[in-house]
Each structure stands twice: as C-alpha cells, then as structure tokens.
Image (tube, rainbow, N blue to C red; front, side, top):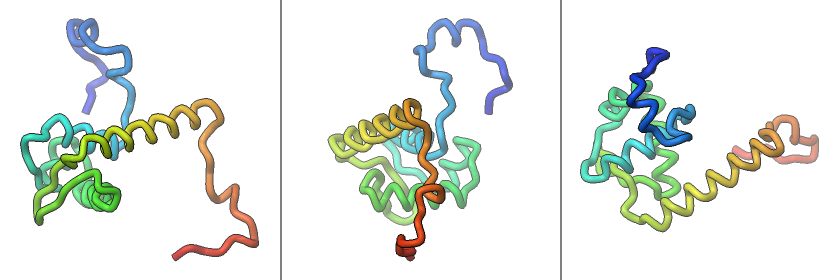
Length: 119
C-alpha cells in the first residue's frame, strides 16, 4: 500500500487520473487485464493487491457470473472477450459519472412496503 509519498519522477510521469483510489473490484480487473498472459490463484491475486483472500474469491465469483473472468479451478484469468470487457467498463464509467453528478443511490432509502424481498 501507499506510504503517503511517491518519487517526484513517478508523479511527473503519471497520467492525471493515475492516483485516484480504485475499489477492490476495479483493482482486480485491472490487475488481471494488465497480466492477461497468466492465470492466477485467488490467494496470489490477494497477495499481489494486499487484499483479503476471501474478499478476492467473492469478487472473482461475481465477475465470473458476468463473464468478465475465466475460471479453471484453482486459477483465474481475465475474459478473452475484449468487447464484453469494454462494454462492462463503459457501463461502470456511466455509473460513476451518474454517482458523481447526482449522488450515490442507497437502495434502503428507495425501498417501499410494496416491494417484494428478493432472496
């Protein structure tokens, strides 16, 4: 994790948005995409990103449901469907922009007595 400082050369050579905080899902997808020539165990991904192994496993399972990662026990790799990955990224960007413009939605605040519980 970050020590709170970086080398000035790293700062000068970075893109404008390079240091923005990313959520764990974004970090995992970015890691797998940057290392798309390899398949990884969840524990290794967790170690590389300094995350909890159980959290990484849960995120990978959700990404698999969306066909954004491939899985052959015990290894994980980014999808080879680049169109699907780009579409998911565009959707994510739209959600982020909407959250920034209008604020995040909190489902509990939107819940009414007429809504049926989904299990």
